[in-house]
Length: 175
Image 1: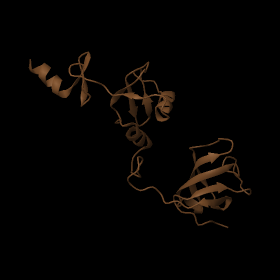
Image 2: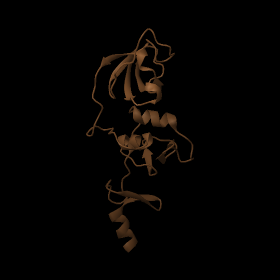
Image 3: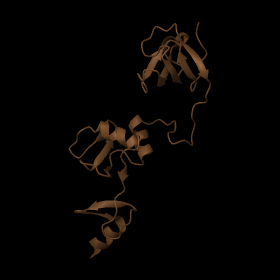
């Protein structure tokens, strides 16, 4: 007894489920793919009574799920657009940073940090998953570097021991 779910639909586990996490305690999941092998669908858990599996994706048989509401999948214009990017590239856009570019965190003990395809790394090249989580939930904030000469924040680069905007760096080098 298959279901005709569409990408973007919000579903919940039913009482007949054979799955452990995506059971009746899972109250909301978003359908993210309907073209899986064997007529299965891929879902992302959004809400669960035991807070289990939230954010995880599963490929499941649609007969064990019920439609909660029909939602259109996101198109452009939102902060997280449907693009052919890695998840970390999307995280970098959310934070207003670029992959591979160093940045500083206010009060960060291991500045500078850098986002890569494999996660957030500190100045000692250690994976900083807790710091990344705290950035994403707003407990930490990224410090925009200021020019040591003019105090501006436009296109600041590291020049020697002091950060400088490109204009001041040109002037200093020209002297």
